[in-house]
Length: 373
Image 1 (cartoon, rainbow, N blue to C red):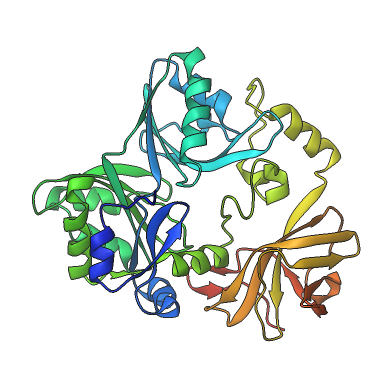
Image 2: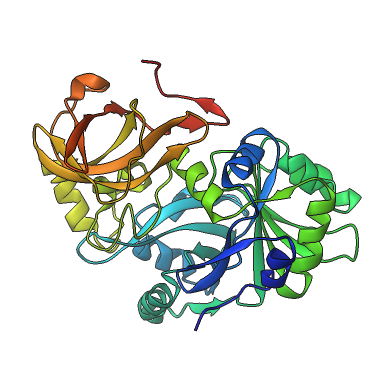
């Protein structure tokens, strides 16, 4: 049965086109996906991400538990409110999920995990937590709204009570804090994180107050955006989508997420032995960024041909910012030169189309990082 967020009726009243997304009835756009994309790049847009799952972890050994559970090291989190992006791995080094972990106190951490992986994530976390006597609580009483864009923080901060504005305005990237709305005293959890490559907040709000917050943001000039724009924005920003760019058969090293792995001394996290071997010997596959200068669109599943063997397109789309097709591809390991000299081609309906190999992100804060032809 399709699930609905508390904002479902609100999306429909705004004329959203709704689609099934991992079992959730979600807005794909409110009229124009391209306009919503540019709205976030140029001003401020908001997304209903209430299908994401907030999980609170409490216990005397909670930090020890997370040192065991996650590939990145929570020892980096020394100040309450700080956050970390990380993968949660199986014993074979494959990615069960990618998530954000927040350090709130020595006995309290918060996770935000993907919607489509909710059930398996909770089962895995609970199974691992038992040995550490950590309490695992899914916070299904919360909704979440992501406010993204160069003017997003200013517009969101304007809705807070006066005494919270300066403190929230000083939040650094990947940190969070509590605040209250000026109208009604509703407590929020405000995180300076996002999935678009733009600055902004992800705001956790009690479900009963989510519609009021959405409408207040709308009144403040933040326009709604759907999953279509969210996907083009995150791909331009070089951010992985779970289930498409990685899964339980893919290690972080094969998903260009080596930067999220901490092989710190004395920490025996799940999957570490496989990652140590891949770091020493090299992972069998690699993820690369592609740009197609010809007209057309790069799509998931298309065959990618390289000198080291064939791979495939993972995420592919038309980039509204660049005006060209961009993609992630997973291909066999081996040296591949950047630019057209990489000799990489994509099979598009039987025609081998040359593409350029580029570093990603493709776009950062509205500016292209892709070299001109």
